[in-house]
Length: 209
Image: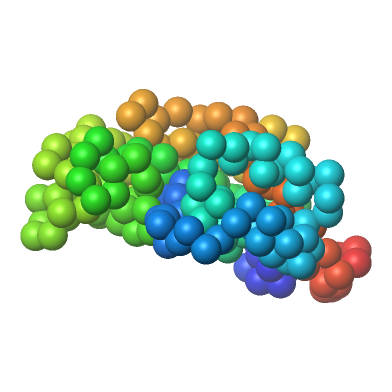
């Protein structure tokens, strides 16, 4: 956050994002995890009661173990990506955010955008050995072309091709079956975790505390 907000680094472009279920599968089958345990863990992590209730309501239908894994995903990856981009944008620098939500239709990770699932799409390496063991037999080539093209554009000129992140509209490129820019699509997650993950007390040169 200090680098994102500092004048010497302000104009360095930032691209930040995550997969939608980075750590969710880690809680699958963990029957000893109860909803009460999840609630207590999130409260201890610093989530205030009203936000905690809304967050758990938004995860209704998932087993408690998977809710816990999703909470780790949002706390560790998805919300910090947005907050880092917001810090960069507030300092006047260029920042872009994505959320990878495509999921395999079959196989051991069916229905989950797990940790690192976005990598073969980013680098256009869907045909490499081992990829289909994770993605299933027919990962979408068009999505890989979209993501790879965006990263090439970002590497070349710092602009992946969608709206810059800002705190008023919060545009996020959602990579799924049909990739599109959505405005504040992670509002629930952000409102739950922002006060926990953001270094609000940091004060740098010319920056308010």
